[in-house]
Length: 69
Image 1: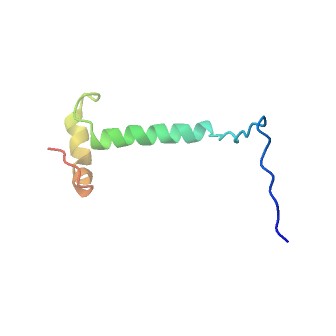
Image 2: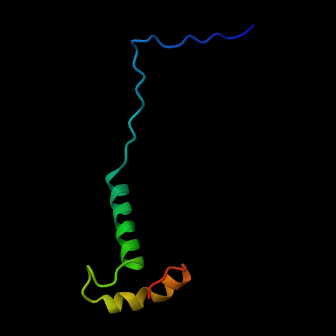
């Protein structure tokens, strides 16, 4: 015996469930993006002590095969 499936009526709307994201998750993602920017891209545009930041992340940039100079 085969099961039968009836499709929804044309007037019925199928609405998905909303995804709930906690504020803590958004904060962690924001800090991760800011950290990635500082580590990989910052060359003095935002931070005034760019040479210190550059030297701090210099080996990490090369380890990730990301050009920095």
